[in-house]
Image (cartoon, rainbow, N blue to C red; front, side, top):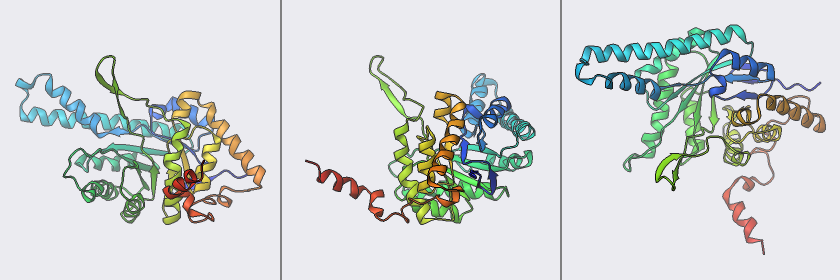
Length: 328
């Protein structure tokens, strides 16, 4: 019998397949279905900082002439508390109904005061917390240091409020991902999730308007994360990695584990194929371990990371040029 269990954020998981924060994890019923399908853990649908502020602005804009400063303060406080209360109730109910680990999620763009609600997530029963920090720099005078410091500030603010493990979900638009990951680890992050899949713009040339591009990932998107999982896991072996983006089948799960990931986060494939895809991933992982006679995941985790392979250059861009220079 092959042992698929693993640990992530100090939590014991029956397998390394985690359902990412999304509409798939916004209700007790959906999460119970995911547990039944075989998921090892879930990350709850994020509480969005922008959503809270957007609702506040909408309420105030309904009657701006008759809204006094005291009323604005009341609206802000009421909206924030009401939104957070709904999220807390979701955490409590899910913890009562399922046995798999439940990771709360905050989608934030600043280190604002409201991040202190993370403590309430912990008190409601969340096993861990994922910070999904979404920031797209648009000012030409913003420095790399300032942008990275935003991530550190958010992490430090939350870490000062909670004792449960914290991971940080990041994008790949950084000058030095390894250096950033090391700073996050030094400031209390137990793990990083690579990568955040941003909503990306597109242009409709028939209507001459800006629209949103395809929201689901594709299997080829794994290339974005696989390289960096292999590099970061080799450079920072004490930092856990949740590999995300482009994980659509069992082969992708196996590849990320071989590169050094602790767990894999799935989302688009479940939307596209249904919850049964999770059972398929588990079965593929079992078959792989049977074929190579691996009794536990730890026997092969990181076996093909940057630090373990004979030619580390395979993870670097230089190899791309060497490959095509030999083509006729």
